[in-house]
Image (cartoon, rainbow, N blue to C red; front, side, top):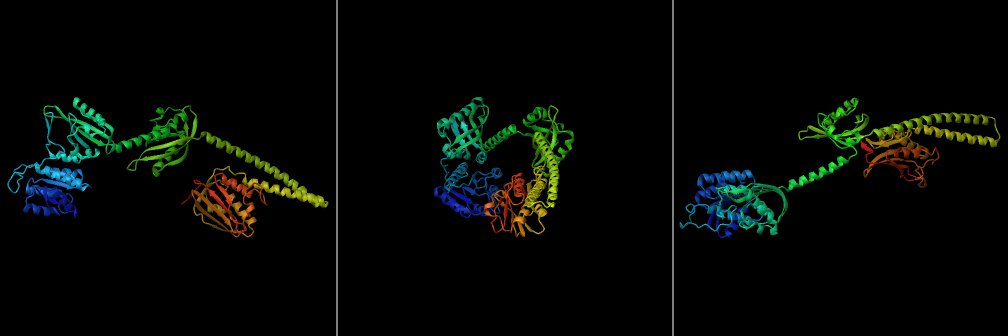
Length: 621
């Protein structure tokens, strides 16, 4: 029976260890709670072996080992700890530890392994070192299969020359194994055995065809081993293997083991789990493929520019839009292709990207086509920033907007001419209406018969209506002509508020993207309230979110709108005035996708809800 000193500062684990170890009938266990207490016990009592934890206060396991070796010689010492760092393993080896075992989650398995390690450590001592109380030489108990046993295979002996190698193998991140020339497993570390869902001792001495399931699965590793033996050269490959613990990608390295005469006596194998790397590589390949398809099929030109302004990549869209072969473009400065007068603006744009560190868009510039013509492009550029915050490249996309600009200019010119024609026509019609109105009034001064007087009155009324409509067209002739812009809601509303109406606007800094005639929208809503609200004194404007839309409410405290008129008030020509006010309100808002509805209650005031879609509103600081 072995006398064992177990040193650990844990409150419960040492008692559990004593129960398990003494339960085998092979050990008597003395407990110590610190390295100092352990040294005191060793000074007063002989022990066959020592088991120690690593992480203990005041004196850790390594310091305890050093003191034991200094004062008590080569007594077997096992470091049994939950700490698995390689630096701890190496330091323990350098100071003469016999075994290094990691604590696990299964007490029965871990203490069985500990008992085996103690037996092996004690068995390696000479009979003179280990005498029992009767002075009789203690017989070594039958050894279990050690990680690297002394085995004779084909007349060649594999021996464990240094326990340090076993410690390194057991704590290696690789699966390590040794196979003889016939395919029998001589050694396998715990990590490799875990992949087979077995204990190392249950696998050592068995043929690979007995270990792999089905047996045919062993043919590939056996073939690789035979190749190493026949060629006497190392072998390496990356392969996917199905193990009992699950499938994994492994980097397999096989090296021939030679004896003193140069004869191959076995093969050393190291297999590293590279599943994470393979999955990352596959994800990267898929990502690259997706982006490559997007880039190559994009209608826009995708490009990359170095900090020095050199084009390092251009997509096939460059050839499609500008005619140059991509190989010709790559490596040349972007200035080579940009219209000279626009180069300063492009350089300033890049500097702004660097200054903000963010994506910038909206620049328009001219660029040369391979046929010598000039095209108009717009670009969006993002910086590529390294870990130190330095811009290492720019990635951008450009779009040919030549035709779009031509269409916009053509439309703008057409509108200009139509407005000019409208203005001239309106002026001429207004002059003729003035003539009609003048003669009508002269005729009325002649005191005609009642029937004629009634006719003249109706003509005069019709002329007034026509004049009002002409003036209305003058006010709205620019609708849709100017480009939409951002407008702060409260500022626009305050600019058109009638002096007799009190306004409460709670939209703060909210802005909407709309036609410049947005002021006419709120002017007409105020006009509608004053004309038909009868008793309106206050208008309340509020901005609230509804999903991803902004709702602007414009509510008055007048009599409201009858239910049967709510759907008709936005129709062209409906109403008691010109009939165009609310109709044009709806049309102006619709230019930028904004809609309007009336949701008030008759008798409680009119309430208009303006729905602004996502992207057409923002909060301005």
